Image 1 (cartoon, one colour):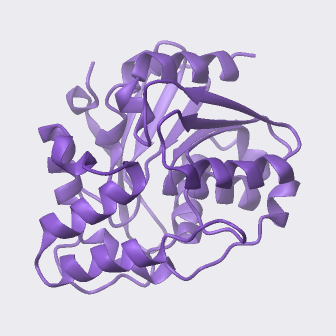
Image 2 (cartoon, helix red, strand yellow):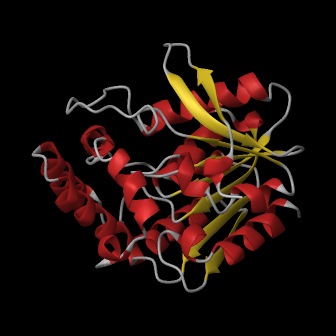
Length: 271
């Protein structure tokens, strides 16, 4: 069942911002957190598979489709910390007495980490797929992010999106992507104008040592080396973290090899 066949729900945040999300299944809840240029449609091959074993919440983060801004003005409220606070509000409203599993991909994995830091009692387990963030000793994403954002600000969306997608997933990825994925990314192109303000942020990994819930670090076998380097740092600071690899997949591992991704996630969450 592709995610697009599911009814959409709305959650209103304290500042009157609306978050759209998909809600599927019953039982132990898992929150799915997408990364850059994506939205809840990114999880189309996880909703049914994971939903057979529990309840799935898949929100589109603040500023993303279907509530994406069409203007060129950056949103000052668009940040990893704000996204985490937004999702904590969603968790507390829908599951006030029950911790949830949190699966985050790329920038969404950074959001998932922040949720675990801000509200540790709300998180049962974390799955971090190719986490994306700036850490000391790991190459930054500043230059390609700024180039992509500049191209989009000038109206050259295709060039900007190709620059970003090829940098995070490998050369020529944008040209080879399927039509539905390109449509989703185009819908979210202007989020990079807000995200560019995070380009210089350098995060101290030491606070991640406070995370005590089970953690699975998942990498794509063909992902750019930067993600493996980030996971090296996280593994060092999160003592209980486990690590695994999705074969025959790059950064978008849950799309390239969904059977392996779903199986490894379920094995971890059901332990």
